[in-house]
Image 1 (cartoon, helix red, strand yellow):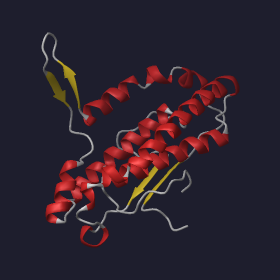
Image 2 (tube, rainbow, N blue to C red):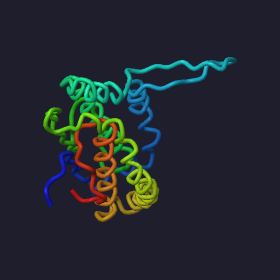
Image 3 (cartoon, rainbow, N blue to C red):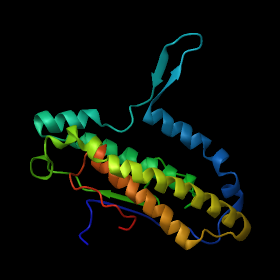
Image 4 (tube, rainbow, N blue to C red):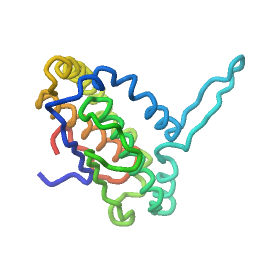
Length: 206
């Protein structure tokens, strides 16, 4: 099969795992999750009022690139670089949370997570009108991924017990989780970061 424009893989850490950090992974991840939250942005209710306070650096840029593609047929390189850098950081945190690796997620080092995204030439690679409907075209993926992600949750739960008792992440389970992450990332690249017009395949494999 021809390769998809968004390539994703993780160097799985299967055996000789750190059972202590795996057992308390949710607690240990709190600092990096807070840091990621400050970058992704969010909103919190103000006590005693109906108002909300928003904070953060803004997260993944979606509306801006969409407007630029539609009206100017441009995707500013620094917007692309910001999206990919944050996207990779999100994935490093995800890999840590999903128990695929034991090293703590770095803020700027790719570590063992490989997310490769090609910078698009908007004039030749992207249809200027597709950003208006990509969210709709991605609905079949969203529906299927809901069930696939639920399955991945139970696979990770199984892997958590496996690591605690045997010190190993079952290879087949790790391949499935990485495949689910790959699928999610391709849908993100198509419908949110808008880096490709090639419709994501319904598959876990590369």
